[in-house]
Image (cartoon, rainbow, N blue to C red):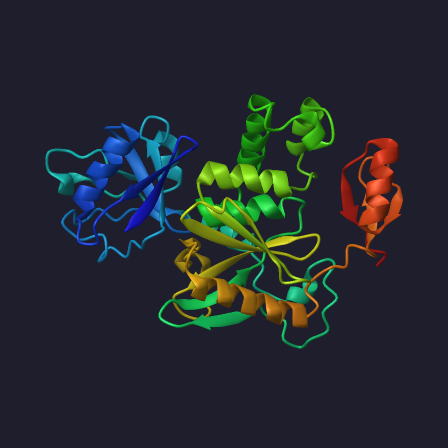
Length: 346
């Protein structure tokens, strides 16, 4: 099976046999990140890797191909190991001597769950659907599970939340990802010149670090390269799939409504919680692609998109009211303002 290791803002790809033991996996992690003492978590919300039985196979430990293991050195994760219930997996001569830290506080899990909307899709700003079927749609995927939409908050960071969830299993990595993008742009001036950014590099990076700035194609390309995963963005209105990082073996799926991004995931059973989700899939798996397209077709039938040609916008820089994407583009050319938000007169 193929796994990813997230360690110190770097992503490592590893392969391990399905019959390998937990002890062997820990040894592989140690050699990959070059750390003797580390903590490891997986799933969402991130939970400690179960090392109670080091001879348990990775398959029996319910580790699936495509999982991301969050690894931190024990020195930098000392406080986190207490507050976030990590395992210290610095292996003593007998791996079974490792012990479990206290359980994660219930309130933390509640906060994480509050960051997802599992209620009415119609409650989202800009969602004009009138259908009675307001719960996120589900598509049965034979031998794989049930695909569903994981709805992200409307807080101008929906793209970063969606990608963070799919690639890091975190709903609150927005600031980290924004900083990553700004750093990448600053250190790669030839790839991201002012002409590509549409403004001075310093200005673009400063805006990207602001919580009210949306992400788009440039950000998806950078995040795809960073996580070494293809990002398939499905336009809800047209059904077209825009792919970033097409050469990567694994793929994540997001849905674009015209002004908002949500994430697609597969649950092992219907109505399962997010921590059971599978979020990364082989890019060549056409069954997954077809399921994603079918789910978006359902959303389109619910009018789960915003017509960017006619929707009302407000400039976040000066407060001017604007009509549609063309109005925003004209205003940007005239003023240099590039921060816009949907305006609802209700």
